Length: 186
Image (cartoon, rainbow, N blue to C red; front, side):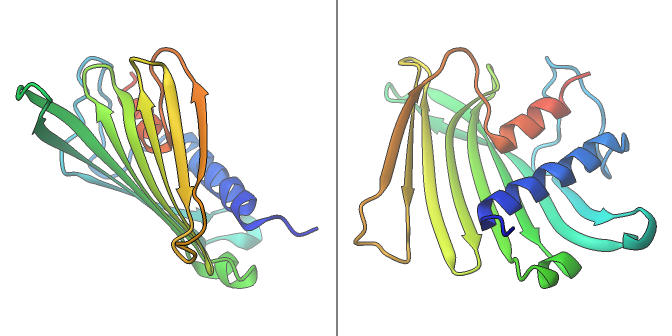
């Protein structure tokens, strides 16, 4: 049975993150902080290398995960200064399994996060799976409690974008902001 590329990537990413989180070892330069502190270092880069480490499959590379956090300052509609966090995640397959399954996947995700509520405001994603490329944007309107998701195919710019909306309540996370949210938990 052949799984669709996106499903294979999701399964691969979830398995890899489960191994990375389950290992219980902090990444180089990573430290535990309280939920109030949000004290991860601005501009730092977290790098996780996913590999098999058991039995016959020992030392087989699967993927690289890279995460960065930057504080952005701007002016709101009234001219008052406002700040947000830009959290970036980059995932790329590599090594043996990439060659075995002829699976080349790259995802680049940029999330704008409200630092006070630690809730995502905007997510931009580039998803490359071989020749298939998708660009998507998710806008989280906390006041209205609505998310609007738009996906485009840059290989076919004349094609209509896919648009979906949904309701939500409370704080909400995307993939990258959830990783940083978990990181600041005691």
